[in-house]
Image (cartoon, helix red, strand yellow):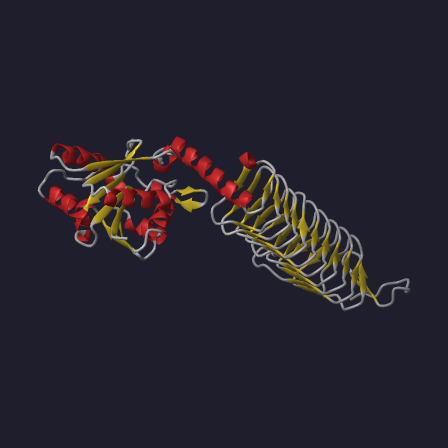
Length: 406
């Protein structure tokens, strides 16, 4: 496509300050605009911003940056059509941009504008390349702000040039997010679009109006999402899951056939068939293996729970590894912080940890061991042994009446 696109990202050129760096549905506004523009490849992308350091990480390396619109004349001659658009139009899509450019070129227009007409610094204008830069060069406008760019429409009219108009059925396409009200309006519309997309992909949303899914989330077919759920960041949810009311899942991976009930999951992993909640919390680095059950009011941080582990309610595991088919009784806590450093706890497979146990790390509990309820474990536990008490002591033979002291 014979096209150059100039995006006004911030500063006096748009009057939006730094709104293009803010997010709608989890993506910066500027990224929404540039993603729409990139779909019209091949194009020349140029950003006008006095805050390049802020915007370049959002925009990527294929955008040429200038500080003022006057410097954008370096794009002259590289394409016959120049599209100038604000960096604060998150709801614009590639289909609308393509339609506008095709209309402009078919009509052989000097200037093309969108109706409804731009308001409150909204910019989406198409220009004939040679006319735009020659007009600006000869002082018709200084083009230092949005108003002067829009005034070029009047200049073209006054000089008898062809001015074309393209009507939009959806005025939200050119909604400029210039204040909190507009941000809320854009957020609501983007949420509606995202939710509609996932329902079309076979995801059941019990109440779409109360379901909050950000743009980079992925969801498998057959999954059911209940109201007041927030799915954020780079979250991946598998097929046939149930995400219960009030859950927050952020930058996490949820496998197939998992269940999350009224819980918070952050930078964590749940493998196939695992479940959590209600009122569970997976913090950064938590990893539930296949078939793990984590009860209500449990918390896991930077720990791996192997296949089939059962973790009772009111428990906390931090910096721990737990072998498969182990039972973690209610109220069990890893005491992993000594005031200066965090220490690990390693629990083998087929271990039984009784309710109310304190595991004082660093600590290793061997395969098949049993820890009595209410114990405070301060030393390693040999495989197959039984320990109990405060501090916990090893019982060499379960039939012995007196335990041995470590």
